[in-house]
Length: 204
Image 1 (cartoon, one colour):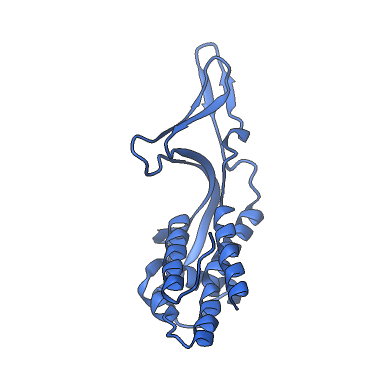
Image 2 (cartoon, rainbow, N blue to C red):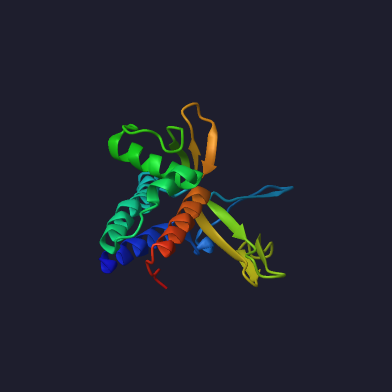
């Protein structure tokens, strides 16, 4: 039983990590030079495949939401209370991911919405994500060397630069409910806390 649940948790982590890449410098800038100016533009989404991005998002949604049933079986085998349903009903991010999963599976929300909405994921694209991290005095800079035209990244402490899949979760009227990455990260964190409460050892 633990082997199956451990693998499921690792799959969830792998799907979350797959949303970002450290290969920032692989994206080349477009440079236009006139008699008076030099224009530089960078499109991190230029070579993205919309179907591949949708598959990445669907895989992560499924891995997060399906954890509920795996945890339920674990709790039953250990004869301990299962609080997964309460977690979905009380945590907005968990509820949104669960509803997105049901819509993806059935093309509609057949059961009662857990978030109170019928969410939809839109605007999937790749973008530059800069983070200074949490260490004191950490920093990150993404810049072009005007002498060579090469892009560079300099970081210190916990600073990082990544190319990240981003998207927006909206309701039926198109109103923004959450940023996709934020909702996924919060849902993963919430499920991990529930796993610990149930006595499930988390992978290192």
